[in-house]
Amino acid sequence: MGKQARAIVDLSLKDLVKDLQKAYADEWLAYYLYWYMAKTVSGRAYEDMQEMLEKVAKDELEHAGELADLITKLGDAPIANPMDLEKNANSPYLTPPKNTADINRIIRIVTEAEAGAIEVYNKIAKKTFGKDNVTYQLVTHILSEEVTHEEMFENLLER
Ligand SMILES: [Fe+2]
Ligand SMILES: [Fe+2]
Image 1 (cartoon, rainbow, N blue to C red):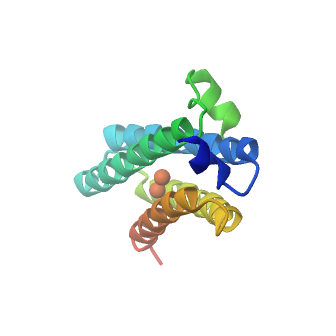
Image 2: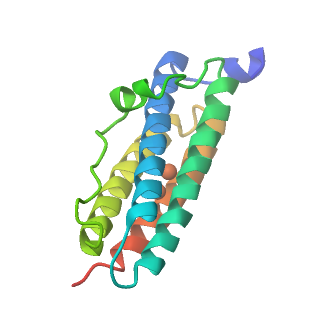
């Protein structure tokens, strides 16, 4: 990002980058969690769950990439060491179920992670609205995808 592009960001850049780094860490943890559960899910109709988890994992990896690009544009570098991801995340890593056939538990884990993501992006969107339109545009785009993820999995919950 050039001088003028940075100058029009009407809030603390340091603060903004910190929020983006935290979201970046969340995305990697979500990616790993969903990818892991996709690889290990078992039991009846496991293939549908595997397919959904793989699709959502791919979206989370894409979000991590988009955030990495934005952090770089803002003059910083995304977290370099994977050991630092959980430390910097908004919430701790959610543990996959021991029982890999426990589809309901998987659904609850995903909906919990997505609810957290929705909260985080909504907060960043509110903070950047009218103050940093580039970040605002990216986080609202990601937010809309997290809303879709939550809905996809919520619809599977047994009522
Ligand atoms: Fe995401
Ligand atoms: Fe998501």
